Image (cartoon, rainbow, N blue to C red; front, side, top):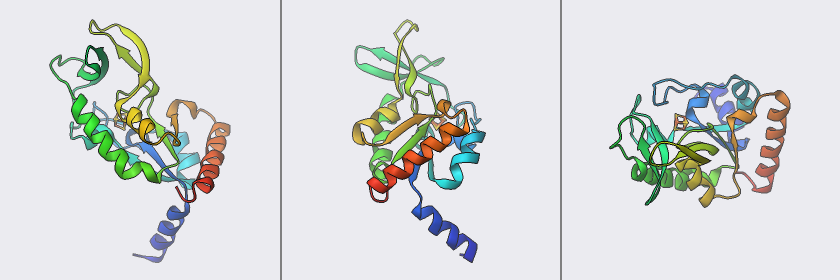
Length: 185
Ligand code: SF4
């Protein structure tokens, strides 16, 4: 490793560890093969935080591109079902992958920036439909639900709140406070 790379690695290791939905960092992992790169997050937060970019649906090997899914309230609970492919049900796969990811990475993190409205990553904004396709309410995506249950101390924030520099600074301050409190998250 060159000197600059060693220094950069050392700096990263001192920074608060923050998970982030991979599509927000510009990775082409969305169902349509695209991304949701967020300029302000990249500019104002990325230099100061040790970002761990994760796409639960790509980790679950659902493919890129892949058929879109949505959360549906059924008699067996909330399920992730195909929007167009009505027989598609990826609930078990997503649950299993989420538990695996959270177990491996959750303990390191003091915060997580997630993509709003996603059936995996949404935090309170994900539409939940009934069996006839009518939206009934909104809740957490499958990955975020698992993360919240396993690590309630992690600060989870949707990307939609980062619309100005003040919000970014507030978030950074909270991350560094949590980082100190949890002694190296
Ligand atoms: S919202 Fe989450 S699951 Fe969807 S593409 Fe982004 S990281 Fe992947």
